[in-house]
Structure formats: structure tokens, C-alpha cells
Image (cartoon, one colour):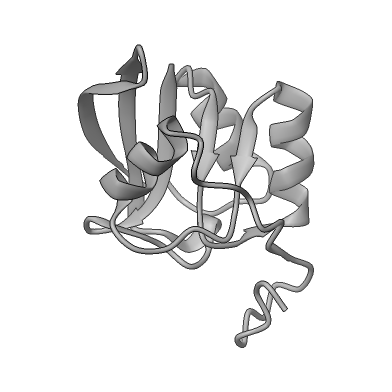
Length: 118
């Protein structure tokens, strides 16, 4: 399974589309086998969910996410975990242990003046 974390350095980013990049963790038997960082190729409506789907991602973890991205991930059958924070690798391990649950933090505006998750 491939789990992508919207990341700023080694940390989960607050907003999916504006992240520095994606740390993609390859997992097997609930263990991380490898990880790679892919820079964000650009925030364009509808692009990133398709980009990650084409990379074989099964799960996306982020702090917050726009509703358009949520809709596309749902169409592609990719599980969405929002409301995450902290270290990306720790978040993935928590997910693999069944301890990381989505808060449903979805942004409905594109101004993002602190309204993500409210």
C-alpha cells in the first residue's frame, strides 16, 4: 500500500494543495518499507488528486483539504485522512496501527485565512 502525506519538510502540512511536497510511504504488513519525497508539481484545481492516483497512492494524509480534492479522491477510491498534524512518519505509523482517524477537516474557501477545519 502507498500512503502519501502532504508535507512541509518532515511534518504534515496544514493544507494539502499548498504543501511543499508529498512524502510517499510504501508499506507492507503494516510496516513502512520505504519512503520518498516528491515536490509538489503545482496547485491547480483537480490536478493533485489525479497526480497522486497515477503514482499508485491508496491513502492521503493531510491537515486540511479542499472539497474539490476530496471529491476527486473519493471518485478514485483513495482514502482521505484529514486533521493530521506532527511528524509525517509518526502519522503513517499511527494510521497503520489504526490510531489515526480523519476529522473531516475540509476547506470550503480558497482564501484559507485560518478557516481550515473550522
